[in-house]
Image (spheres, rainbow, N blue to C red):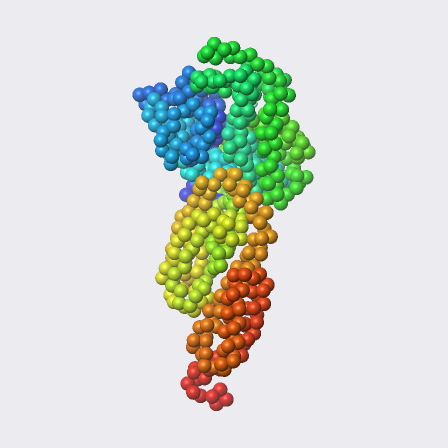
Length: 618
Ligand code: AMP
């Protein structure tokens, strides 16, 4: 896979003019903003010296709101109006979400998630915009000027709807989005540039709400993304949730007051974090009913309770290694990202899997923001042209339907973005003036097993014999993962195109399932493809012979005609029942049986062309 060198047009700054640009890690639990000053990236603090902004907003009525630490501390008092982990909801629909432990009052719309608050209905986009606005204001105050733009990070497996929603939130917050960047990619930028590492590395990113893994090749400051994988519904919150359930079960609680739920969630999170530093933690609380809780949790107990969650992260790691075509032993280092990688059993499991101690010499909470800031600095034109940028990859192959229901892959899975590829196609029938382009996504051979993304029709193809038209179909995926497909007939220049959202509605589990299916069905798929191809060949031959018989059937004796018609009938019958080899054998037989007929037709056509003269006379 080639690395793309990107120099953004119109972005080179005058020599002494530094454009203010920031990187923002919009996290499930916490968010950060960073910038590059005097060549070094650092996180920006608020007026109290705090860098981490809890991703929490409390809506207090009369259009007033509180964002960050204060909102988090008041969450227990006002759980319904205090929104946290909006990243789990952004770009999703209500039926896709497990609302069981969420204290919010959801609106009725099934299309977009709405939360009823004292400031009216709020979408997760509004909540994220409030967090981003706070970070923009912090940055502008701290840097003393308006920002030209921001790079905002998202989990690698965020689908198109989630990416679009994040962009919308940024626009609402008054930010110019220079680029959305995958979180592990940003971390690699931070590590690669700081440490000038070489070799194949894995980025293991366990944050509050998401898990991402990337396999990257780094050499002399150049990066190549080999593969990505992950689980967008697994993170530190799930460890909190498991510990929460344990406390509820152990104390035989039936929690009816939402404030108690919030209180306990805060306490178990704190205990979990304590256990990364100390061998035991206490959970002490008094519930609204007056019931006292005083539970001691040991690190060993906590590890036993949550070991299955740690194990769940290893499967996507294995898949990413497989996709990248590398063995565990090829991995030179494992970069740990995300606050949840501080948990000791996570570090132990990753270390045991790779047979080496993971790298965590940069602050796992900050690396993503720092890498995003470095990328923003380049995109804003503060570095020399020709800076290498590390870009994202397509999670599944993109292609189109060809005759016979086959999927032709145009952009293979794990291609680095942005990417563009073109391929020429032709018409199948004589005089065909329109062609339907069916864009599909997936690894399977048959269109029926892939995911349909869009269909559009190219009209106005000049009538020609089958196979003569040259239709160039171009697939383009931009840096944010949005696909546009265009088709152009080369002789006339007629053109049609469509914009599609390739990953819309696909979560990582669906992607994993599609990949699994493609592997387990590879043998059947290959047979189906061979059959479909043989069928296309047979149908082409039959239709050509039938057209020739209509024109020149008189060149054949009755016996010859019978023999050919008999073979055509056998071939048609075989199409629905026989294997590729059997169909191909009959195609050969029919082709052979019509050799003589073809020669006679050629003679006749030459005679016609010569207008009655004989070849020998010329
Ligand atoms: P992030 O999304 O990267 O900010 O990660 C936040 C997650 O990391 C939350 O689930 C935190 O509870 C968790 N976290 C932060 N510090 C620690 C710690 N010392 N031990 C365990 N988990 C932590």
